[in-house]
Length: 362
Image (tube, rainbow, N blue to C red; front, side):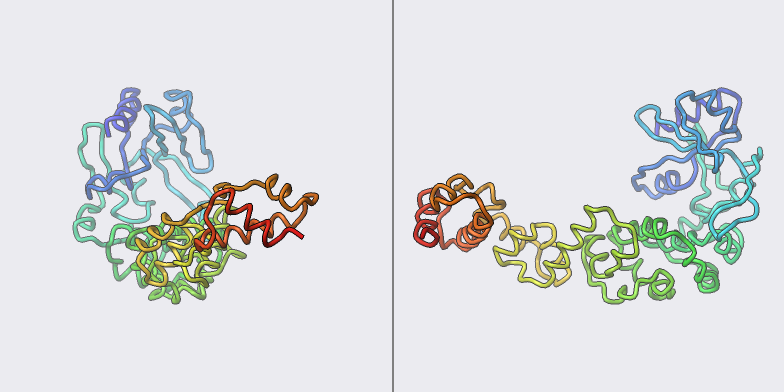
């Protein structure tokens, strides 16, 4: 808070207006943590860059980002927006000198509450009342707002999910009228919102909202109704089976694949715990309603957790078999891992060497 207010002071001391706005103020009033700080001001990007030479401009949005006082702040100039294209972005923006007019372009009333440098709350659109009533209401006519920017419909579901609020009746009606425009959004932007919904402790409220509003069809999430309770967003994505459609990192794809494999297995079996790892087995277990504590305990009690923990080396195996290196080494390792994990073979060099000698040496 103090660092953010210092940024406001830097702007106002140069003769401009500046306020904290949006999620930071909303969460402050709800006593919730925030990761991002948004600032709105009548200073233009050019004027902001004179105040903060280290700032990075984002010209398309009339904003700059600064890294200052160990924090990251996005500062946006008061503006009006005109002629939205592709149901997502304004074709034109115009800088203005009126906070009220700037707030009118925003999405939901709970995101329009401001704070000045003296911690005074400025609530020009009665957002605090909606905050107290725990309801997501649109700024202006939601039918117009959602037609302008279709992403706002997913944001409405996201805020209702993470804040555990209800959607205003007019918001629900407007989503039902405009939801077909969601198909025009990029999969990247849709996934960003869905990730926030799926990673929320209240994820199943969000999933139910998506289903009740029929957004599963617009989002091409045909298996959304099949999602079982899990505390992992990747666990939800694994059930949805849309890796070929939505953008995932290589790491996400690998974890989703491991979860899908683990779902088909006995997650308390030592080989499966060893092969697919603690995370994938825990997620699979949560989907199957198996106590994760049992999975964790079983994993921690494995004799080994990786091939390097075996008390034998490739050189030892080659020496025992007395053959040139080949695929047989990997096959022997697979066998040894299984025997050790099932505690049929002690994990010591002498025992393993004797086992290899008796079973594999010609």
